[in-house]
Length: 573
Image 1 (cartoon, rainbow, N blue to C red):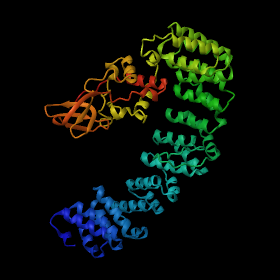
Image 2: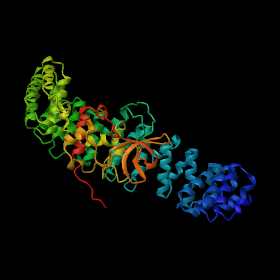
Image 3: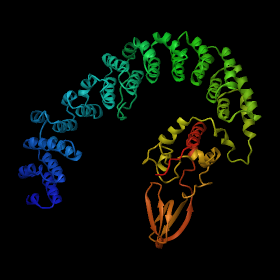
Image 4: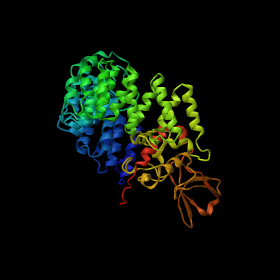
């Protein structure tokens, strides 16, 4: 107890901590006094200790400390909230709160979150927007299920922050009654809400019947049982015409996807109008054609034929899929035209349609293109698509031609089996592979400025900003297939054996007369004194040599396309 008056603030702080852990009742008044100490660290430990004593007399002093802190120090705010949790009950906090202090109300709110009390819902009507958002976070993120209806009923507007809107929408999605579906449709209709919020509302409607297992906001595993499609379909069905005609492009496209998922057959005439509207973006028209096909709408064939005379790669591909399914004979001629005159994406799509199309016409068309492949007359960007299309078919002649092509590749070329991946990929899909595929962990070792952020990515491998301007696609492919063939200068790996029996492996980062510096695979810098090194030898590249086994050839093509498009190297500050 005397150490609470020590001149050293750290001694006072640790004395408060020990007295709290010991639950010493005689320390109550002294600890309350320390809530006004000059040292914030002392105030922190005093507040935590008061919570451990479990005495209601500490509630008002704790709220006073929170008011004085005014939310400036988050550590003190946390300590005040935890002190309240131990010192009283929600009823006691409510009667002690001073309405004029937002900081004190925040402390109460955080304490209610900690004990998961549904009374936290009253803060959804707080005059301070920060508290409303924090209450919504608590109700949705913890979650506090009994307070979800209050969150779902909260009105949103153009002045509502996007994080709050997301949680209001998610509460309606999770509750899943007819009135909640109507609330999501109402949000999708609001022109003054951010497009991202409107798209999220429509995405939730699309997933209404079969909700994903992960929570839409926090990503935790919180499965919802499958439910009837009817409430969402009825709520959206009368609104699709307005959304299709007046909403921004991203919202309109999301509305098309929701209409398809909810099987709103009455929307067929509106979808057909979208599919044939030259002024609509290509993706929107493509999704409209796809939705007509999913709904088995009678107008889907006519919509597909009209789409083929309008510009747009995606809509052309979807139109060809519909024609190949409904009228295969009529689809052959436009498919042939796309294969000759279409863009790379359209030609790839046409080959995919032929691969899935039954019957001799499709088989004969693929045979003709395989003859061109054997003769070296097929552009690189569609070679892989043609090979994979033929591999999916069962006709013996297609298999024979494919085998003939594979055997014609030069045996002396180590890249021969992969040269068809050098072009034709999708850079956006490649970026997703680079940044999100956990089994590859590209960003663990490599940085790309402007993509992963200044601080994201690792230093084990060379920075890849501008790699597409410095190296050829062949070099990129070779580096992925055989990382040890050409190791970038400055990224050689070494193994050091030291006199104490340790073995250090890493990428050489420099050395001088006294030490060798390495970066380990975990990104840690290790300095090894030269006097302790008994053995030194080169090691294989830190890049995994089985990387291509974790990728399909299509994925490898996308990754190369992404890397090849990294043309700009940021200027050094």
